[in-house]
Length: 157
Image 1 (cartoon, one colour):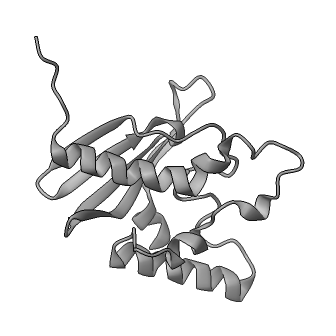
Image 2 (tube, rainbow, N blue to C red):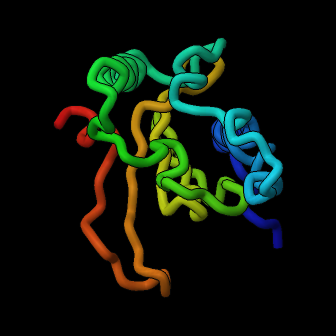
């Protein structure tokens, strides 16, 4: 019996997202707890906004840019008091794509480490992040501590 193999689109989306997380966090994951590690080496939202080729759609790019400008101008934490790509203030471990679901030109990717789902849209032969959905769990991983939320909603508050 032949197992269900992922489609070309599923593999393409999975690879795009995994490549992003490998660049953004996973390359540092094993070193981040080392007392001698220079935390300035870690990537930030600002790095993603400046990254080429683009990985965010225009709306998400604009909302994150506005958030960064507001935080810089007021020198206060804005609507984001956590890393929106890792859904954490203190990430641990590697972020790996667990599940991929394709519907038309959209892709939903589950990253269990961050209890999040990345939403992507097809853009030419590549993908763009359009939103991130977050789930919040207690330490035992079973009971939700608060309702689900998403990045676009948080940035529009």
